Amino acid sequence: MAKQIYVMLCLFAVTMGCIWFSHGTGDAAASPRLLSSTAKTKTPTPRQSFEKPVMTEKQLADFMLAMSVLRFIFGIYFGIFLLLEGNRLPKTATVIQSLVAAGLLSWWDKVRTFQYTNDWPPLIEDFAQVIITGGAGSYMMMSSATTDIVVKGSLFLYSFFVQLVPIVERPLLDWAGCGAETNAKAALVRSQMYDGWVSCKEETPYFAGVWMIKVFEWAAIIIGGMAAAKFNATIRADLLCAGIIAAEFILGSCERAVEDILLLGDPSPSKRDQVNKAMQIFEINKTIFVYILCGLGVFCQVKLTKWWNGEVTERSDLMCYWRWVTKPYVEWMLLPLVKYEGYVIGKLVNSLEAGLEAGKASLENVKEVSERSMSFDSSTKVVDVSGVSPGGKMAGA
Image (cartoon, rainbow, N blue to C red; front, top):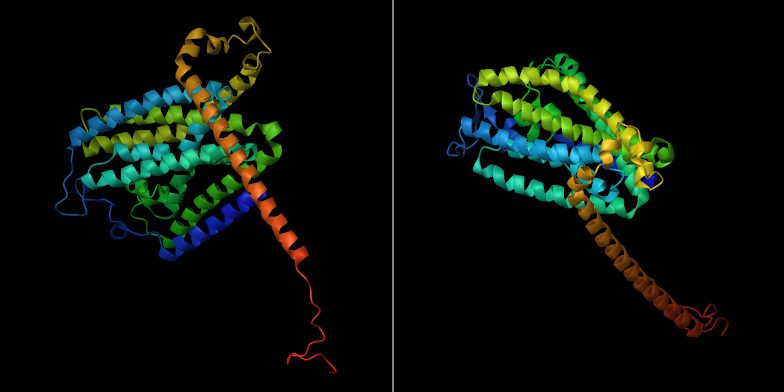
């Protein structure tokens, strides 16, 4: 099953890569919503002359801060849950991971930076796409253990590789002769990092760098899924995936909050340039913290498995570092997720039972049609016409 899935993924990746290469990477004129910048102020300007921003620079900074605070709250809550107790509520963890894989965090970043009225329709459409894709993906993962392990293995290794991208991006920029700064808004248009590279002078190194990154990303997805399907009992892809997504959730939320707090009260271009340089240093160091948090989360969930399974009933038998996770106040904080876990399980059971009944009915119909066909063939008289000539006379008559 895993082999067939990844053969289709490979074919799809090659097809989309050929289409992308044949049309090129595009430029500002090719994208109707891509924003340009003036040379002096670097202030985003709309493509249409009559389209005006709905917020001033100060209002936009306040809005971005509010969205970052919301992401920080939700990121800490869901991130700690995935990090420490994702194995306890697997269905809820699967839904969260599927939504993240569908692009929930990228969509949130786009909401943070919207400025024009015509930005709302694509934001609404992107949100619907995230919900539909994430919902369908989580249902497939919950319905099939093989699909669940394959997807989580792919997601883990892809997320592991993505943490290294900021480290290798700077040498690629220098190789392609690109500017020192990147355009984060342009990178959000197609959710591709290389769209943020500006003033690149070397064409061949530029395309080589783009394809190096994409090939490594696709290879991580394929290898991660195949390894998880074959060695899941050893590597526990579900715990690894929950750990690294939780770490990215927590640190990414902290990163956005710190960035907007630093810009609070002074959203000028010069201040933004200083903050961007500081955040680039944080982005590189964040990779180390993501790996550390992921390891701590996996270790914690492995140690607490016996507690959740009822094999250990006394907190004193647990390591002192993890006893607080079993306290009543933690149970109270996770009560909404526990309720949601029961709701998802009930809906999943009902759906699978309905699908099973429909499958049985379809199978009975197929058998009935097959029996009718066989009875019709057996009752039909077979006439030997091998001795009849084309004119209708018997041969030799």
